[in-house]
Length: 231
Length: 231
DNA sequence: CCGGTCCTTATGCTCAGACATAATCTAGTC
DNA sequence: GACTAGATTATGTCTGAGCATAAGGACCGG
Image (cartoon, rainbow over all chains, first blue to last red; front, side, top):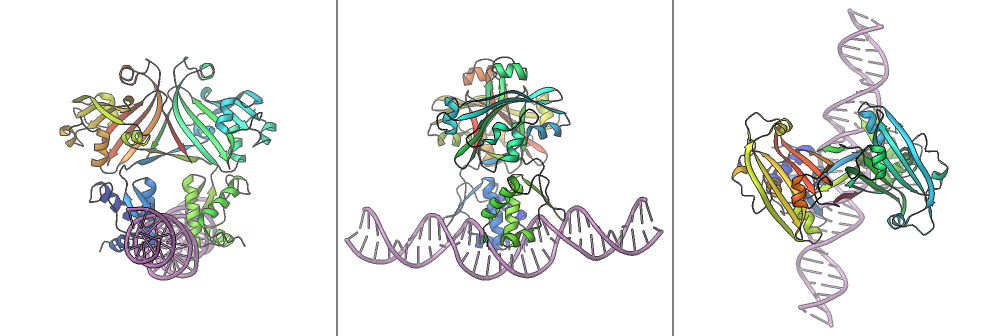
């Protein structure tokens, strides 16, 4: 009488069978009803357990085909990407923000391609810096599609960053994030105290709302910055 | 008569209310039963919708206290971290692996501190390279705690990488991952064709199994590498 | 052998009801 | 006023039942 009945315990048992036990990569698991019977829980509970394991990336589920242990058990890491201000204030440091440049210009070619814009569309280009305890922490180089978000043109970004305004204003959307290491350019040398060509950790993020691009941003970080997570 | 009844639609409606609608940051939402009544769905469905929104990081839920919109609506990004071989083969490129060095040595001080090891513990130090279509793709600099994983010493890593062996061997565990940009050192210059000091995108991962550290690895990537995800 | 149609089956989702649990609020006691 | 014990309440989870949906497989005709 195992009497597991709770989905966390079921998850643990199944994980154990996948890693140590008989269910190696590629194995086809028994069906939900069979597993539920074995573990003495309802199918709903078993369904939730398997769903969560599938979200971890360890198994693949297909209707009719059944549940299969993935050949390459990838494990996904979650990175929380808070507003800069919150990230800085959480460490106890004081937060300060400065707008360096603000231009309304026709979108350059590379941006038109990336955002899939029509020719001669104006974009708002903002460059700002976020300081932690007076030290430059992050350089924000942002482009906003004014065709999709005309309000942005009249918004005053000298006090609060565009990030916070956008999060509060723009509805949910598709986001593409990528991380990379770039050599420091003139801008990061000036404002983040990098040496020219030194490694800079960059986050690039593009945000979409129903097929129209809203904003593209590059966040360059001060030297030594690292993004960490546990799971 | 909304007749939403499906949890995805419920999620969308609630997200809309949080971003555009009346539920700004800090708002206390109505209870599950009230919301279920309003959206004409069962409490189970509403529970699932709210649970998923909470996993996105937009709301916080506490028993009795209720459901509250977070003040800083952080959105979490998921990064899938597959085995290198799978990552390379998915692009259609051919995969090749080479072991450069293998040493059994007493753990250096920085590693002892990081892994919380006793003095005079031996560790296995491996350096290997993963090639895509003949070009160096990733340099793997790995340390394995032989006290926790004595089998590793007799394992032959000249044919398959330690990554694949570890994934298949070690049970589930706590993992800490961090991303950063580092200047290229002698090793990455030699094997990844970087110029000395050029930006290198690095992933550092430490794996634990019940309070004992198993392995610490630094993965350095070829120039131009970027890690991308959508959500 | 090839292709289409129907049947079967495993997962996906919803529901109503029930009990568990944590945290807040309240009332009572010293 | 301070502290404690119990009532209250919103979320957390489990159950068993049912229908929906995708997709593999069998059957059949050409």
